Length: 123
Image (tube, rainbow, N blue to C red):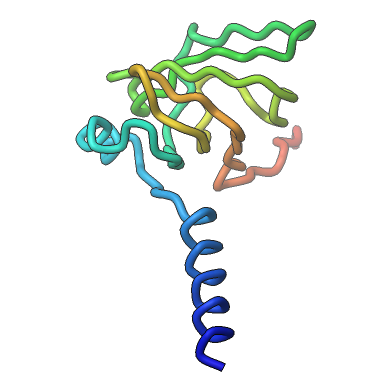
């Protein structure tokens, strides 16, 4: 019985360890990035204006993740389908690994606008 309980506990621990990752705002990440080299993490920031390079033939995307004002950019490399609503100036969450001064993204999630306004109609 003890062996089964130990094995079950180990499986739960291993499952939590492999699926858990740090989540940072851009400000938090910039302060702590050197401590998280080689780790899986999520970083929320903004796609810096003028930094997007997309190749639809190879599905390779490169851009800079920055603060909302465009300051302190971090290069991001991603290969995959371009996320819906991905655009310069948009808030995104990048999930991947930080190494060699850049984020290698496995997934990019875009944020929906927090406020929707109805279309203006002429009176």
